[in-house]
Amino acid sequence: MNEIVTKMKQMRLHGMAKAFHLTLESGKNEQFTPDEMINHLIESEWDERYNKKLNRTVHAARFRYNANVEQITYENNRVDKNQVLRLADCDFIKRKENIIITGSTGIGKSFLASAIGHQACAQGYRVLYQHSTKLFGRMKMAKADGSYLKELAKIERQHILLIDDFGIQPLDAQSRSTLMEIIEDRHGKSSTIITSQVPVSMWHEIIGEQTIADAILDRIVHDSHRVEMKGESLRKKRQPKTEEEIVLENFKN
Image (cartoon, rainbow, N blue to C red; front, side):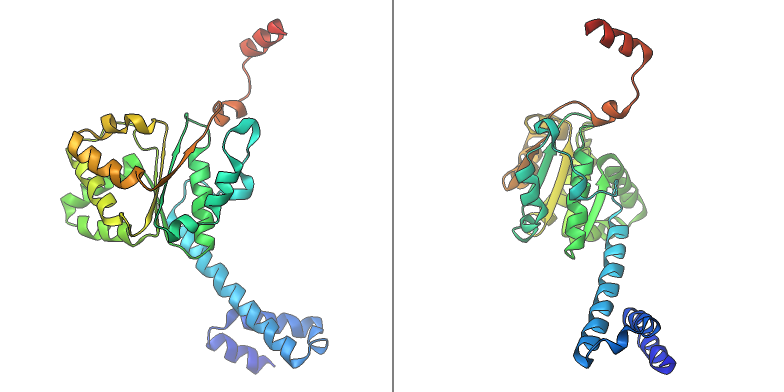
């Protein structure tokens, strides 16, 4: 039996070897028919490989939050639950559609986007999380050191590009050009998720250069799912109240 386990490991069937070893130790092998034993070993190997692949995919995505759809809260109609669950099935990726998530700061936009991204990873899709400011900063450095095309190709290969906190500051000419190239490369081929505390109606001002802004927004907004989150900041809710706020609240009551 030890020789069998050794050969399994040499063939890199680590999940199967682990399951076989544990089954022998527990004595459950005597309860299995040959067919059941084979099925048990194959399922164990499949689970092992799936979990390893999922861990690699999530690690490569570099999400801001370790989030999942089950953790999303919907109190006070903060976000449409039915819409979130429809997006969580990831059919929008197959249709090469985009998602735009808007709302005030701290409302949970990044968390929601990360949760959808994790869901996509679980279904075998490649995802890349990028904070908008850092993305444009890194692309400027890539132009300087000659790795710009390589970075663009990496972004293009992703099934989902998640651009977080878009619109924090207006784009300069170089960032505007970079965004146009990224969106053009992905248009009709893959999906992009964008979060922003700036309403879409103001994105023209953020992007600048009317003609380029029109071209970018036409490719992003036209086939996008719009998620508008409402309510006050969740981060503010989690912060302990100051003594002055407690006194004022008691006075009102």
